[in-house]
Image (tube, rainbow, N blue to C red; front, side, top):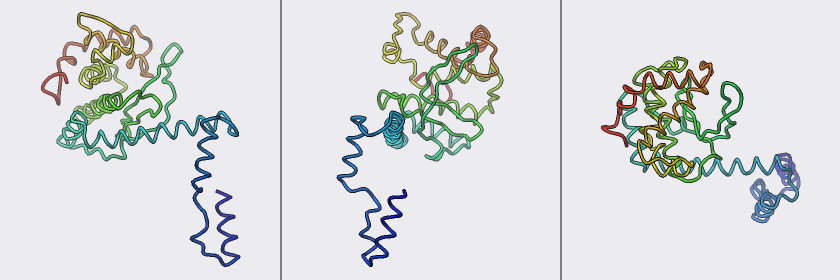
Length: 239
């Protein structure tokens, strides 16, 4: 930033055209900077990681925009949110860097996104996606939370409310498809979908600050399981 202003001020003083001042880096400078970040020569580890995070977030934003326009799953959920009286502008789904989520009793879990109820927004964790399909299911998962919030006024401190929304989001978003479970290292030949939904719902409820321990999360998920797993709104059936 200081280099730009210095360059601009000197071009004004010698009478040259201000528009010719290189306020943006030349092609060579951009190439040189890219080489530095790729090789790590001349930059700190922190600078290199920051550059990587910015790149990941830009890619995430690009995929998000494409999915909001073309994904049948995402556009279906956005349409039903509008029909329920909740508009979701593109800016309300954004990519950023996420820290691991702390859980009760110590430790943390990585996550690909999160719904922010107080702002009606969804944060996608730019560095956590392995492909565009993963971004799609993450957006769908969080949009189902948003739908529940819009339609049913969820109290996220109420563990039963939270558990119900997690069961629905994991079941309906595609998070528990066989191929996704295989990638995670979970293989089952009987009721694989239900096992995945239950496991992931328990993990999410355990991370709720209002949840004292994993045993409580498991109990609450079991209590609401039947009614919430069978509730496929706004879909006619499990996607």
